[in-house]
Image 1 (cartoon, helix red, strand yellow):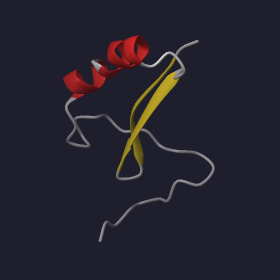
Image 2 (image 1 turned 90 degrees about the vertical axis):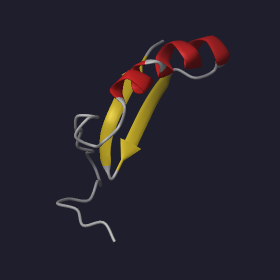
Image 3 (image 1 turned 30 degrees about the vertical axis):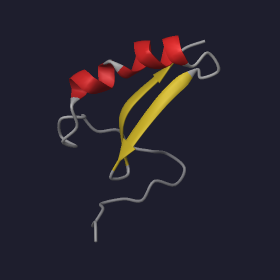
Image 4 (image 1 turned 90 degrees about the horizontal axis):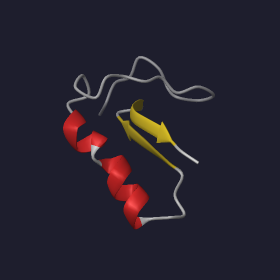
Length: 59
C-alpha cells in the first residue's frame, strides 16, 4: 500500500520526474512522438504516485 502525504482532489501537486524515479529523457521524447503520430492530441500529463511528473500542452 502506498502512503501519501496528500490526496489529489482539486489541485494536483507536481514533483520532479527523477524524484519519482522516472526517466526524464524518455519523458522529453514524448512530445515530438505524440505530435507526429496523433494529430488529435493537444497535451500530455504523466502522473506517478499521485504527483504530476510531466505535463505539456500545445495548440
